[in-house]
Length: 440
Image 1: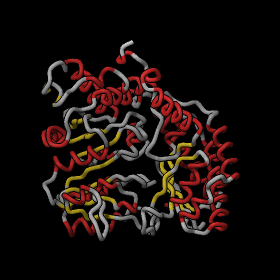
Image 2 (image 1 turned 45 degrees about the vertical axis):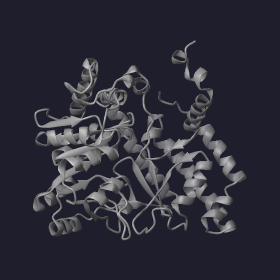
Image 3 (image 1 turned 120 degrees about the horizontal axis):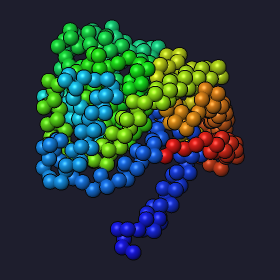
């Protein structure tokens, strides 16, 4: 049999076994990383389809290669469904579905809207912002955004809420060309009218990065950024539960600038298999079933926050409006980096995260939790109380290890090895998680 017609198992058994191992890991783990989800069978089929074979540089109807008659229809379908999913008037709004990722989408938007060294404002990374919103430290410019543009952050207050008054004050002083709203680790809904007012005062454009909440926006279960923003970017794989990809929505006056920024300024040929998968994702997000899914995501995040609080823990802002719970371990004397490693050995996937008052992103006091992925597997509020109990038991083990081995990270990590309590917890979690269905 020709190698082109062999299955993956036949052609590359080593990789096949790794994929099977990852499938088992996903099934037996509690996936609590807020930027992850389990996508549908239809999306996986589109990703593995013949659409991956086609090169399609350019826009619909204006390609640089022949043979794109069907591809144009696929991409047009994705665009049409994107506008429909978010209730947008195609005479006022357009969308580019070609960006490879959320970071690339943000960069394309900046290239289209700004000139080098223009001033921008975004939420500071330690306060829940994203690297691409302009993160820099006192010693170094970290993201490309801060390297090529003049970045001034706004921040959250001591309670963890965005300080809109300070945002007003700083933006009026520095007069940025662009204000970015949206976050990577912010558990509350955004007040877009406040952002719009600040932008209007200083003559700035307003961009929302709704990557984390796009599925919630589509379900109309949170404030709507499209009512106030000039440009809206998003990934397609978080709460939207699609493939790895991104979209840029824009007011029609920015159409040429955004599309030219995507191609030829930043990208080459779009990944049409991902665009096909985005199209079917958007169809799913326009169904009554989708609204019920998102409503359950929100119920579950509130239940998880309440369950942690009832066990004596602090949650940043005291709760959540979306799928994110920011869990503080400062009072317990633990770091997010330590418990992340412990939970990984116990079949729980989380990520360490800064919380207000932290000074180090590598050794923060918090853990970011998300409920979108496990909700896709059918978890309800009662199940998340069980999840909270597993987390609580993990912290108890971490405190014992720290007391025995000391606070230094390398010594703590040594205490994780061949630990019977962690192994027992992991076995219980694998059995519990394995009892739920896996989408796809």
